Image (cartoon, rainbow over all chains, first blue to last red; front, side, top):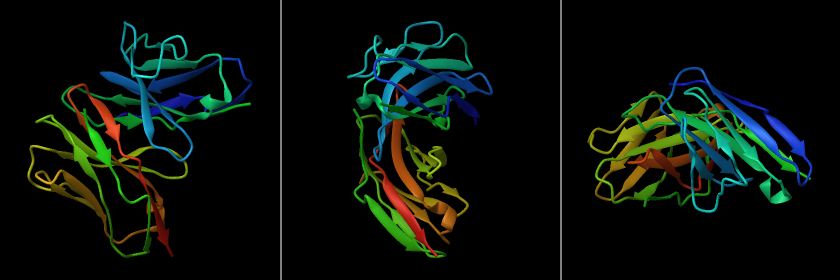
Length: 115
Length: 113
């Protein structure tokens, strides 16, 4: 398994600003992902964070709005840029510890409110 | 592409009783995995149980077990001896190939004392 922490746990931001969310894993992992969970909804995958290369984005999500970095095998950041109230959500990061396994372990999430 | 369907938006169960949450899925992959995750009000996603599609035996983790019907593409979760701490959203998910997970919409389970 993997223990994942996220910072900040929550934030209230003004429209038009940006927020960077950090995700730290307690061990090296093969894959990391970022999800968005809107209130009362399921999880939607934003992108796969690739170590040393550009993230792979899902349909409806673009790099200019959600730039992602993954400088090493234990850390990733997601930035929510030029925020609007529609970006108010919980953002979760997850990781797969090893090869050949599919179960993902999740961080506690970041609750973002945009006013 | 994979799809996961949870047809029960909400369920309730008396403490100490047994409850079954339903999940159906569709996939074109021959090798895939199925999962149940729990998300309590604290919002931490917790892996409850996993099932490899190539295994015929149903997975069991303490009070949690699954009924995996591969031909019917059904993957239900049974919670025995329900406890107040089981109150949460439960998400069914499938994964294959690219390691990405596809989640269902979730079932909100309330355990009543």
